[in-house]
Image 1 (tube, rainbow, N blue to C red):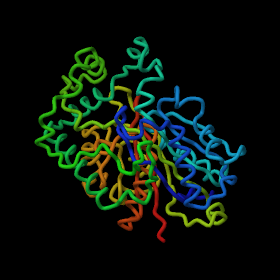
Image 2 (image 1 turned 180 degrees about the horizontal axis):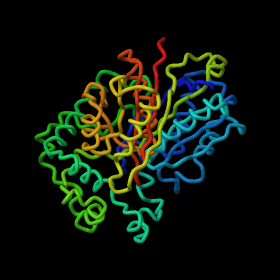
Image 3 (image 1 turned 180 degrees about the vertical axis):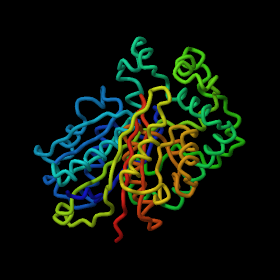
Length: 402
């Protein structure tokens, strides 16, 4: 069986997921095109050798519809013979694109491919695909679907977490994110984006330096009203052991909405040699998990545990964990359950601070995990994302020393 190797990684900086965000004026197809061109230029890649381009996106409608991966590949000038496809596993779309593409390389179906994700939340709003999971009352009632924020508060309640603990984590990730950017930890992957006003966008813009637990304590709970509208009742019907839903998460302990894109160049050893590229890591294994759609957000941790076991490792063998910050509670739960300290979990901050660009987030995290392994000369890293409806995907990588 062939090895699936990471040959390179690029991403945009993340913009605010609103009309005030720096990337609002650039469509999602264009974001992918710019990354494809940058990836080809920095690797001197013969793009005709690429056998597929797989892009994750959570809202595949309007500007993110009609197979944007194929559209972008044609617009990037990669030739008519390079396929492209889009997949959707909600927030885990980008990491699943990486996982599935790596599996195809290991199985011999591909030897050189690009995988990643994109989301322009400011242009294609969350839930705009209007699927029955979001909009059909009968479906919502039948599957017990709740808003992610209600699931987060349910998890915090069941785990016995306090508002103070959640706020402390929210301040911690902001501090890490600001320090990581100031130290240049993201610079190697960022593709600068020239904006219409003549400026160049090259830094995640959602970070709030100077955030403190005391400042976060002033924010009101974000999901109390949703709970009162019937969401708490759905959650408690599925998990009566909670007794009540304690609404503890705020905007400061929830992932910030972002625009962004990321791509990884993946291949086997023969493709790396033919392209003259030094492999930076191997994708050892991946895992997909699911749980009930009310507790929802624990599936990412389940995937982490599964992929570590699949590789024959233990949690202490992992040098870096990049875990999507689907609210503070889930990060604190993983930290407690797996014995992962702050130095190994999201060491450069996470999506609460830097933004959650849905379909792009998982690809960003795989690349960020690799970069951190290289900085600390670690061996193993895991990236994982929890998605809507109780889905989770994790990828385990092993750094290849230079």
